[in-house]
Image 1 (cartoon, rainbow, N blue to C red):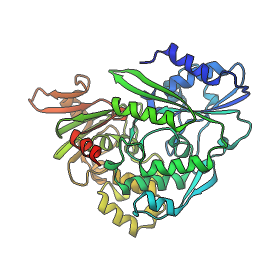
Image 2: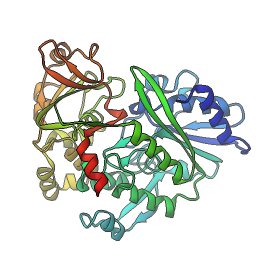
Image 3: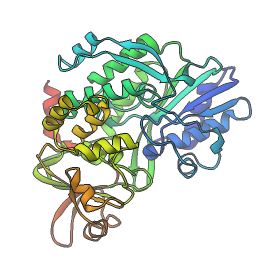
Length: 417
């Protein structure tokens, strides 16, 4: 594990000898609270603030802009809120290229046949920046396979066409075939964009692999550079540290969503994505989200979730073909596919700020938050298997963002492919 002293030394080395007058930092937002990227951003700010201008633009993707309180939580008091710039995925982007339809058809194995505009925030193209530092966490991910690296640029700082179509590509191809892997169809799209359109941007990547010990974040690995090889090393370490292989599927999984990170099912459904390969057929997933207050991160997507609900892959694909609003919002359609078990297991949401009618209206089962907290007592459960006072055994996960849980036979089959 890396200490702050060791991390700081590595960050200092990454900018050593560079003549810098203006730097742009691209950290994640509060939804990656346990990435250690907030602390690293603060370290970079302290290193550079006296010798150059330091701007900070969180790689929000479609997420809400960070509030002053969230910035304080993630970056600490050393980073002034006035240095934070909000990325607008709908308005602040510029097209720099196109991933051709033929390439998408090839990587999707014929499932999709559309081109994808490569869009990035205009600031990344501003020649006044001497260095742009992308900061984030490599961890299993439901859309791309393993998060971070160029995803931070093309989605986190990207625009609607790339976000929509990459998410839909991952959903149609199948999460189970993607999560925990490097060379997914979506990653291949990102690699194409990197090879053809991002080379002129003065980028370096700072990537962590982390684990949790209670509330303590452990930095297991730190990888800094521009080459893909650093990402590949991070992937290999994350596969060792963040993949939990279970001997057999679990009948009941209980996941807690930290209210600081999770305020929507758009984010909170990580509880579904990251556990779907661990829950037994006919089993149940209980999601306890005291901070959940909406479905989508913006009003448009929230309305689509409320309109169509989490109805399963086949139903959503049929709805997508028949409805122009879903065709125009592919990331929403992808999210609706991701957020269902396809009837294989039950999903119960105990949301702090959504009514029974709202939760059931999108296809989940409902449990009152106070009942869930009383029954499962997250303050007393440990990560992994627990036996309740009733005698029932549950598998508890305190934060779904830091791993991927699956029946080990799934990974054994993957190794034979």
